[in-house]
Length: 449
Ligand code: UDP
Image (cartoon, rainbow, N blue to C red; front, side, top):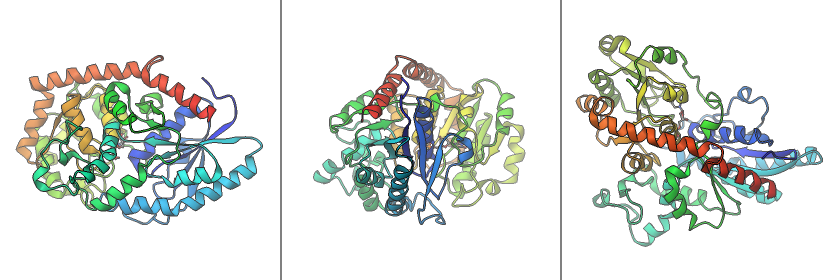
């Protein structure tokens, strides 16, 4: 179904790679259905407009541009965006309505759940708003359960209960809850509770598919009075290279072309998580010990802000030679879709999770913080497409677990399940599939609001 009128949608992404990517993918999908797109973004981590010649970009001063953002200060950074961006967005949209109101209407503000100031702006301007959730429905269930945990005295979490199963949220253990190891858990709980009030938003869009999360979506739906639109995985509906904040090193694709089918283990911890120096060195020797070809993303800031590649011992490079390829940032979606990639050592961010399951690539799940722990649990215990890694990195063990996934019988069973899941996801996004139908429903919802 195509939108009939010039209907502008204002998208407000949260400025981190794992959040910007799905929002821009959503914009691309909705633009292809006839909507006109404006992306209202912070100065910090601003997207590259040249990738989107047909979008309008609106920069909001955020007051935070010089911050060195890490997992340790995410809560204060996010709170800052919500304080600093509200008035600039309100003023810019007021001006937009004054100037263009006769030619187009602002149909809706679609905002990342963590950019919740957008809902107040939408109310002020009497524009409908919709939330985009960039994590899993299972993760949202843990947020929904916070009042219950507080009421039952589970929070603050006690060391002794971390391995216990969470009532009504199996297979999660208390240690898997997104706030269990937060540096500022009080701040995080407050942010989560702010972000997950639906306020007056009219719907929630999910970058997930029913075949992955039907039960979590159904459970969640009981607590909400608004429709859900699970339309994912969105990266399968748009061209791959559109959303990266960092330059992707495409030379690794030529290296992959020379490797045997399903032989390469791809290692990446996404855009924020990082290993300490010792972990990085253990990982390096573990990869060497595994005897498998590997493609490893070692970000420039990968070890406490230092260039991880410089930390790696020279003897490591000599030992692995052509068998290993290291980049600062990879074109991950193309990498995971490459026939040579047979496994993914991942931090289990939600984007990495759905990108991997969409390609049938089994995983080693080494989560660090936030929703990664929930995703790791679902990958390993519910969908059965990953092996969970929960120990400190030690070279001998790293080599062994890589061979368990890439070579051993156990890995073959996991790979088989991963391929079955990939096939289910492919059906969801085809015409008549659940995600494809949800997208049609979403478009109708926007047009009728
Ligand atoms: N990514 C990439 N190249 C890399 C590493 C990651 O393009 O070398 C992309 C990846 O495809 C994903 C995003 O960065 O879309 C990371 O998002 P995710 O939710 O997995 O993790 P986060 O970075 O938010 O922790």
